Amino acid sequence: MIRTLHEGLLADGITVPLTKLCAWFGVPRRTVYYKPTKAAPKVDARFADPIKAMIEKEPSFGYRTVAWLLGFNKNTVQRIFQIKGWQVRKRPIGMRPRIEAVPSVATAPNERWSTDLCRVWAGRDGWTTLALVIDCHTRELLGWHLSRSGKATTAASALEHALINRFGTLGRVTQEFLLRSDNGVRHGPRTSGGSMAHSSPVGATPPSSAAMD
Image (cartoon, rainbow, N blue to C red; front, side):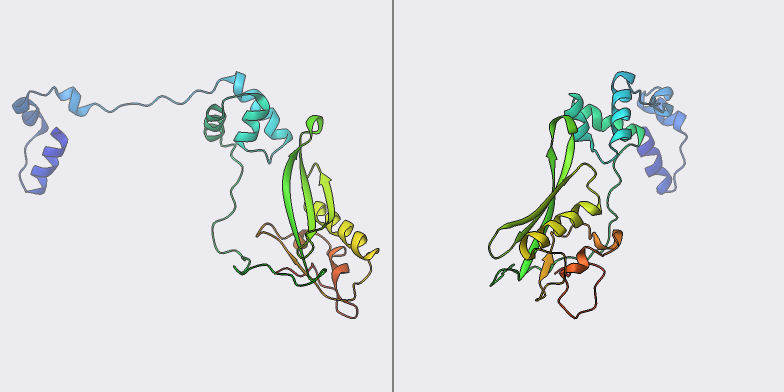
């Protein structure tokens, strides 16, 4: 209150020492000059050590997954993540390619396929990544692949499984079709493109990745 009053008087061109203001209002000067000091946050090694060991083994795990697997309170784990700077790096903010907001309609089989990834708890093997490919017309599951890593090859393997299941081979298909995702990471740039190029029509130049809408 004293400092606010002092600053207001200075703004009006009136100079009054803080000592006089404190004497007039009966406020101890030490109260006005006091600056609280915040102690550095402490981290209990009982929590920090197992958390660090887990995220070094599985760098993609967030604080909720770590808290559940270790049986710790998620708020405690989140606080340790923040203090230690162990948060999983967020996606960069900015404009990214988005799927056009139109109904996904397929009038015939092999016209449009859809792919997606999900996390599955596999007991002793821990968290795994499941890649799925379906036909948007028949809603039939064409291919899948379960992996511990969840790398680009997981999605590519699921697509290979779908191509073999539907066409019996990884050779060229006779008619072009669309492969869509849910705005997730596009896997083509991280792979050689060889597997996904098999979804190109006969006579066409092999693309680096499957066509996505």
